[in-house]
Length: 180
Length: 315
Image (cartoon, rainbow over all chains, first blue to last red; front, side, top):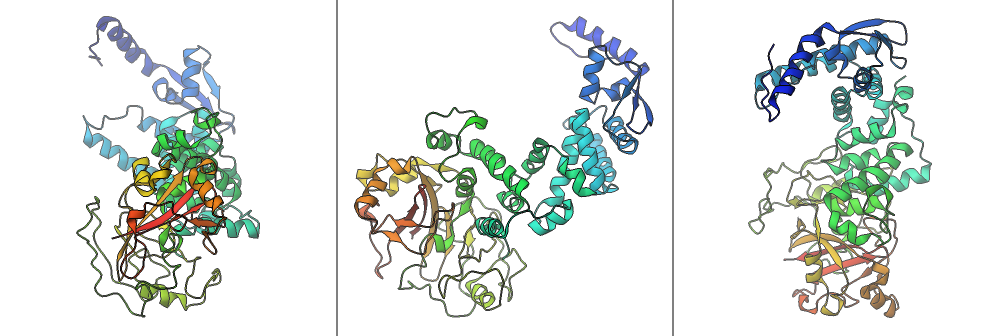
C-alpha cells in the first residue's frame, strides 16, 4: 500500500496519501435509508457521494448518516455501483480493467427497469454521485434516442399535454425529423 | 409509477439527459413534440446552449447589443432560439428554397418511375463523408430512413395519410422526408437534416448580396450546402440569417418595392413567419448570377421577416 506520487512538494503529499490509505479502509460509515435499512460501507466508498464527502470533511459525519430521500432497495444498488467504482481505472494505462468495468456496468443496468433507473437518477442527484448520475443519464438517453414522440411518451408514461393547435404547430415545426 | 418518478427529476438533470443526445439534432426536435415540459427545455435551454457552442460569433452578432454574452441572460434572437438552431442544422429542402415555385418545371416535373441514372457519388464535391452507400428505392417508404427517390414521393403521395395538408396539387409541404445524417445527396422535397457542417459564415453571405448591400451582414451556411441532385441540374441548398434584418438595407429595399417580391404560399422554413420575399426579384442578389438557358435563375433566395434565408445555387 504505497503511493508513489512525485510532486514538487513530494514529501508532504506522499505522507498524506500514506496516512489516508492506512486509515481510510478502517473507517466505516453507516448509511440509513428512508425505510430504515442500514448499510455499513468503507469511507472510501462513502466519499463517492459528494454530499457525504463534505460532511466527512466538515467533521459532521457521525457514525450513522440518514439518507431520508432514498429507499433501501435503491440505496443498495447505488452502493453496489459505488463499490465497483471506488477506483476508476485509467483508460490509457489499464484498458483491460476499463473494459471489464464497462462490461460490469452494462450488466448492472441491464437488469434494471426504467422506473428503477429514474429512482437511481434522483438518488444519485441528491447524493451528488456524479459518476452514477452520468451513467444512468446516458442509459436513459440511449433509451429515447431515435424514438418517435409517441414512443417516448410511452417510455416515460408522459401525457400529451399540448392543445390540438399547439400539437399541430409543433409537429409542423419539427416535421423535418419524421418519417411522415 | 414511472410517470410520477420522472416528473420529480429536476430540470437540470433532464437537460443533462437531453444533452447527451446533442449529436443528432433530430432527437431534440422529436423530444420537443412529447409534452410542454420537454418542449420548453428543448427550445429554451438545449437550442440556446447548442447555438452558443456551435456558432458563438454569429450569436454575439445577432443578439441586441444590450444583452451580455452570458448564455442565461440574453434575449432570444428574432424568431427564437429554436429557429436559429434549426437554421444551423436543417436544410430547407427544395420546397422552401423556392425551387418548386416556378410555373416551368426546369425538368423537375417528374414522370413516374425510379430515377435510374442517379450517380450517388458526385465528383464535384469533396465533403468529408464516409457514408457512401445507397440503398434501393423502396415501394412504400413510410417506415424507413434509407434512400428515397421522387418515385417514392409520388407513390406514397397517393396513399391517404391523415395528417397531410395540401397547399397545391403537386406539392405536399407537410411531408418531410428523413435523410441519413451524413449523406451528401438528398432527395427530399421538404426540410431535413442538413449534410455538411452546421456553421454559418459571413463571407458566404457577402458573395451572395449585390455590392450595395455589402453593409448588411448575412450569415450563410458552409459551401456548398446540402446537395440535391435533380434531373436537369443539381441544387446546392443553403440557409442563412441576417443580422438585424429590420434595419438592413435589404429590408428597406423590399419595403420600397412595395413588397412586390412577396411570395405567396411560401412560409419560412425555420420560424413561424407566413411570408417570404424573393431576394432575386428585388434585386438584392449579385447581378452576375443571371439565368440558365431555360430561364431558371442561377441563384434563388427567400427571406422572412426575421431575416431567415432559404435558397439554392444551381450548378
